[in-house]
Length: 423
Ligand SMILES: Cc1cc2nc3c(=O)[nH]c(=O)nc-3n(C[C@H](O)[C@H](O)[C@H](O)COP(=O)(O)OP(=O)(O)OC[C@H]3O[C@@H](n4cnc5c(N)ncnc54)[C@H](O)[C@@H]3O)c2cc1C
Image (tube, rainbow, N blue to C red; front, side, top):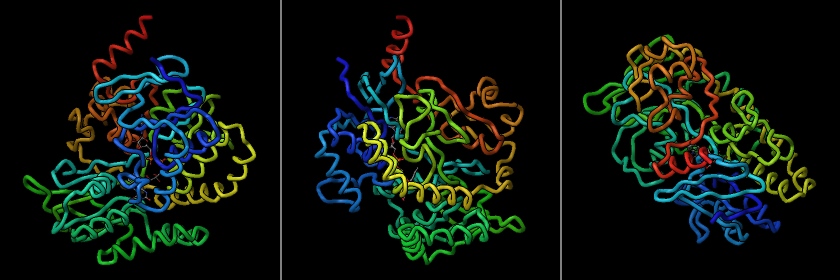
């Protein structure tokens, strides 16, 4: 049986939780779907517990969500839209379709990982992945770690590693100091963010924080033993057995693209009410600009009020959102990636780890599509989620594909898709 809802919300991070809660409190029949075992998204992962654990914001929103009458389905991933206003969801042993009147997409972002020699060694991981593992109890006590890449997440990861007993030998931010100094001045308009930044700086104070530096090589036998860091003029080595490395976040655009929402410069285009170019689809959170928790919550609330038909309540929140959008723009400028990073991989460095495709092999192609056809890049388990954003930066390729399913699917899921096509 296909359950029907006035509103389906895809993604139960802060943006999706706020949207679903406001819409359900307004009396709509709402279903919130997420592929993780519990709601919370990236930032509230494992701590959005209405019973008492977690941050004040997380508790408050989970309590409101639970009291709102919203149906919450976890462990289910949106993979396609097999018919108009119908989503196909897949879980471990289940395929389910759900019909919607309006859809709010809140699928968040993932980290950008750039390939460099040695990145496939055990002990090298994404900074965001390290953060997620730490939240899940990953044991790092006694390990010697380096944190590298770009973005405010580096400080949070370094603080997290240190609090779990790792020795952080250095934090290497690729952005130049002058760019960051300008951003720091704009933080005066965002006291909450400023405080958060100061707290992370304080927690990570035992590790040197170097701007204008980046890791160019990882080396070791069976496990990471050292990294080489560059500042563009000279290089030096640091012994470590853990490298957490990530270059900012990139929005998860696969679902909005599949649904036909307009995407401009890597972000979903929305109007004042979070409405996308498709009349029945709204988008919130990192999809419309990487800007953090407050922006995601505000946009979620605005979308909730929009689908509830209360444009005035939505408009009232726009003033605060404008400030958050300013912060998102400042973030993008401050942590813009330097062109030198395009020469990080050597010809033999793997870019697509799922299908063993090297940088040299990609350089012989002229587009993402040609590379896919000729080399199988992006056709493995991650479906280009890692190598696609790396290739977009390294080679300037657009990866705006609109092909279902948006995630690798089971045989049962494929059979259901084929049955739909044959109808
Ligand atoms: C790896 C990582 C770590 C981060 N750590 C921090 C941190 O420590 N501190 C901090 O301040 N900010 C952190 N951030 C940023 C923070 O996550 C965001 O600012 C904020 O959570 C944005 O909320 P959102 O609702 O837009 O998206 P998210 O919180 O990312 O939530 C999106 C949700 O949608 C789900 N989803 C995606 N696609 C589908 C699909 N097809 N079907 C079903 N569900 C789907 C995802 O699994 C996720 O649960 C991190 C971001 C990332 C990517």
